[in-house]
Length: 56
Image 1 (cartoon, rainbow, N blue to C red):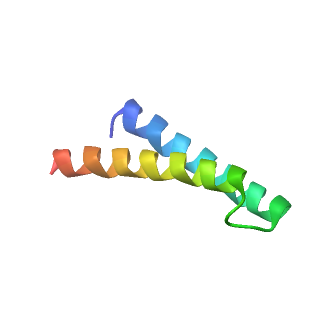
Image 2: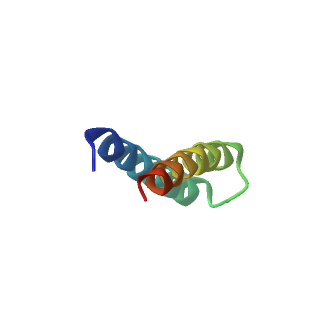
Image 3: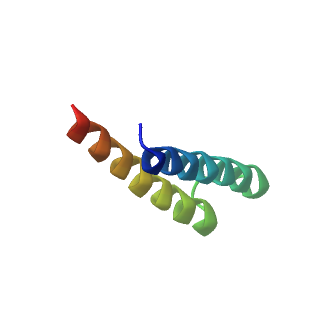
């Protein structure tokens, strides 16, 4: 793996942790903050999956 994919994995991990923390604070999956982070996380995961599929 390249350092680029490692940094993308790190971004995903950070966003996931942030989303989990926000959920615990707000006790809602539908709060604006949780939804915003979740959307960013989705984009990063999609980017990661696209990169992986290109390598095959």
